[in-house]
Image (cartoon, rainbow, N blue to C red):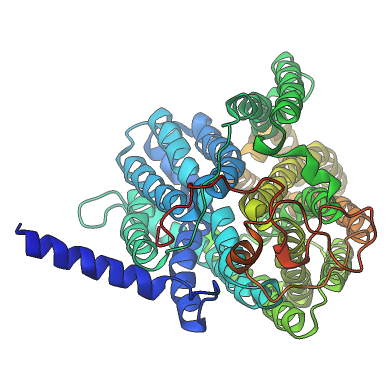
Length: 588
């Protein structure tokens, strides 16, 4: 290649970077924001779609790889690495910039997807899913942080509504795509389920190309220490706790292995707190952030709401599949009213927040909607309840979810220094993931604890009234009820017991819906303490350009003195000014 050719290529690259970069004030045009948003949405769609697709097809995959008893580890390994990676991406992107880490996350996810498609055993699949999870951990939290960098808080919720649309769409398309591909013996000479992973490759490459071309954010690098002890302690804490959350129902919550996981997790947590105190501002999760009321309330609220919301969302497809006999694909389509509600809630709250500047009311109203929907479903659900009867409650629950997801993140981003946008956003996402994991584990444990009792009582009532049913009940008892609960299709071998089985399952679901409603209701009393701060008209980049060179920490006007770390719209600089001579190329 000649010198002139290389020069022309460099000039074109610089021209593209200049066109994608903000103006002198740090502001992006609406067109630039939408272009960047396209790349971010593709990345988020990959992560959100993958989880629902794989969960639909995992049984088919496990059967093909002769590893039915190991299928949970394919989910657990992904959960562990994605959860642990989330706060790491946030902190590192604050230090080194969003662009390289978002590209890294997409690249790792694509490589992991390709490897998953090549897996020859469940052990290989579990390892490759762990690789995939490392990439997935950055796709969600970094996308939200990047929007925080380029869009002022007053306008941010309008754009964040698109993320909820992606989340909702993936929850419908996932079961449909997963069910279709898993049901194909072969496509283009390749086993059908392997396309579940291969389809991520072209989508991931497209997302990588778009982000590479359009995402050029100014960034100032700071002197810092890397919190390796904190990262290691976090791994030590989370790995055993996530394992027991996934395996506790099988092992027993008070088994020796479970107690060992609890002990290791507790030691890891203690070491993590000590490491964060020692590293102070350089910590993976600076503990002083918890003195910021918006961050503290948002984090605790995310744990509680994550537990209640994700636990509740999980149970509805279970009811549709087991009681109504819907396939995963059909159940995904039957959940469309919930998704429509999520989109409506997210979009409408985003528009209202951008017009009024008020965000606190939406999570509180959303919680009321979710609680009403869960309690109503627990009262209405019967074995023969029509799906159409559930539609209003699914819509109501969806609107409540849409009101909750983005305003809490917006409140936290609005209250912290722009230099900590990444760690604050990823922390809230991390706490919500942890809450969801805990909620799913707890609700499934309650469900499977109640099922033998509820199903047994319904079968006993039927057997007492029908001699033939009594004979089938005796056969079921001899075979073992646990076998039927492990594979619910087995109840079809006892036709007279199908109806009492469905009634017992519905009774257990009703109880869990009530418990989920109680958990979500706690979130109301947490988020009622969320401060309503003025929303800034400056993006994170604009705030950094205006205030980044000034030492000290700004204080929000009209906010009581017990909020020293809050700032309007993330416009306050960090307490440590960037060292002279460390500014990076703003086109990076």
